[in-house]
Length: 88
Length: 390
Ligand SMILES: Cc1ncc(COP(=O)(O)O)c(C=O)c1O
Image (tube, rainbow over all chains, first blue to last red; front, side):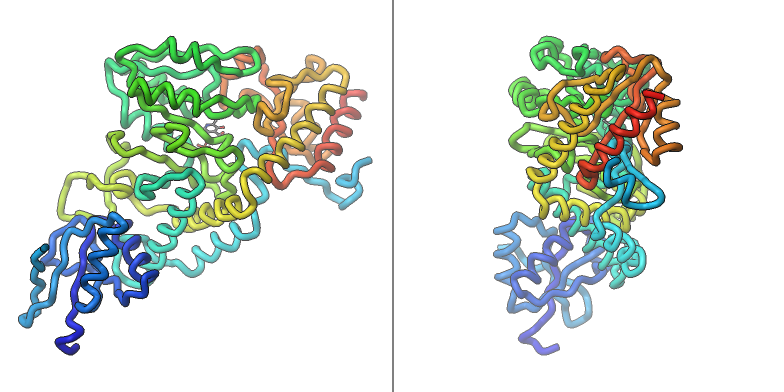
């Protein structure tokens, strides 16, 4: 993976919310992958959506527009751990 | 003789759609079997593709069903096993000792029995008497409300005589008084328009296997935002597994245990079929069949028909008795001699039969659906007439 396409994951609260967002992101032609949430991130939901960093603003915008409520966004650090991204 | 009797060697006329609808649209069979064959995973339990595919199919079904009832937050639509489970979840989740409940004398046992149990535990129950045709006077229901009234529970239409209640009118009153309204739409969902927003419905319970044309083992409960229900069943949801407390979020809070995924997918296909056909067309056909049936029954000597006289005022559910004959023997002979399947007795609704004056003998009930035909109604009328003449 190149630096330009670093992986971000967004975590929601339930499978229902995650898959609703998955459908919405795919509908907006944002490349996304549904995966098991890394254990280090705490949320009620067992799943997470990953996408490329360059789509971050679009994902954030869609979440706001549709009223989806992410628990948080995380990026993969060099040491392999997931770091919460600051919300602006 | 009607064309039904001429059509084939073994005649079968299914007139028990109020119990469960049959046949289902082809799409429902294909979707259900397809889910069983291809969506092998447990929805929402794992991250592998089969689990995800199943969860996506459940989401799709949830969104489709939500559209039919104008439910905006689809997570508040809970899949259940049947209407009975949904009603139990609503009643037992909401009411506790000291609460007052107002309901009607036309309710099904799936509501009356849990209420009876709640009454033993200190819930005060007020049953508003309906008239002999099963009609509820909304004014009488409103007069029965008290400051302690915690819930109004009303059947949308009777499963004995089909009488339709004005839920939107009741809903508007309930909303102004701040009292939640629970509607049992087992007999109307898929035929009459139900808009949880416009009709001010706080809790909507119905079967998935009747008018919604889904497989048995399906039902649903809609819970409006702001309504707090204690979950009836607790357990695994695939979420918050480290936490012993039942999750607070929808739909997980009310969907512990593995869903009936093939059933839910089939239900989604049934509702899709309804949305494509249009409620107006479905209702139109049912009214036509009911008109034909009522006219024919009224013309047979010795037959007494119960419920509202006009098809427009009722669902395609018609109860009758004949010449003091035991309804059970009429039902048996209709099946044995003519291949016509009706349902006799009390239809799980002793209170409704008391209201219309047919308790404890009960009635013969003919309940039709979108797939019945005028020819079948004529064949039934000919058969009944010839049977009663003998
Ligand atoms: C009015 C009414 N309520 C509830 C039910 C119970 O439905 P289910 O069999 O889906 O639990 C029925 C079914 O006969 C019904 O007619």
